Image 1 (spheres, rainbow, N blue to C red):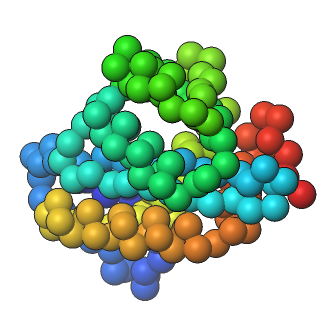
Image 2: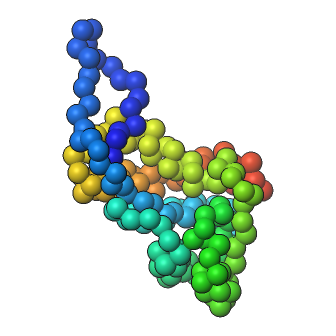
Length: 170
């Protein structure tokens, strides 16, 4: 729960202090999908934040089930090689879903994953210098910040266009 410290401004001689609790290894895990409409007109962000847990294939499957409830078009998942994404259980579940397929990015290629741009922006901007006192405060701040990002189509579009893939937006 240590804050990501960025440069800040303060009056001369008044060093800003970030108070934090130490020796806490609690975290908020995140899973997200940046969606691009078939005609490339709309970009959307769907996300789920889970306090103090690791993303596993069960949580990925639950996330995908929710995603399928919101998106009616066929979906091509382009994702990294997280073990949960490659699990036999999840891959067999995907294979049974009509209109759902997946393609994997090369090994360790965060620069090709537009969702990594979302998390980087979240940590570097709205949550920079934020020192949560407990996991609940961090969880709620992360939800608020991610919802604000999801309401900015121009910002979402920039996350996709920054990636050197074939996803060209209009």
